[in-house]
Image (cartoon, rainbow, N blue to C red):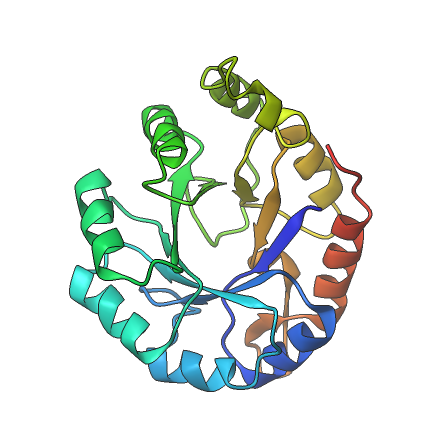
Length: 229
């Protein structure tokens, strides 16, 4: 089954919607962003979250102390790193967090060398998940998926081949995903999951962008219809 992460959660209304829709993951942004929340705000939201929905904290070039402080306040299921965090930083982070807390690394589609490096880091369990995004995360910009298959094929060997029968490209896809294009983009990228934020938002009566129940429902319904790749 293709997994869904709805990112950039900021308020209780969104939590109520997600408790009904039940994506696999939701994300809280703890770095500079229009969707940024504090650890206290995220904890209050999590206190109202249904069991079974996993939580991901999004960071970008935060210090080790900042990440650990958030984890002390709220037991996240995963830490998602969007900045220049290298293997030395990640290795140190891994030693300082709970063994049950996963580490995800988000990479730009245009950063080919880093994608190849971190695919290998995933194989040796330095990281638990790779997320591929556009050059401007959170912008909703669409980018070409033509190079993704080639990048992952280069890292597939005979020993691993049996693990790629149903999910050849083991990563989450982000950037420019909407309810209308999610089936096409997942099929073209052959990903195991999607990470969506702006693509399921609308403007409320106060002119503030917020998650739309209808858009999230349509996206999740469409994803659930995708057959195993």
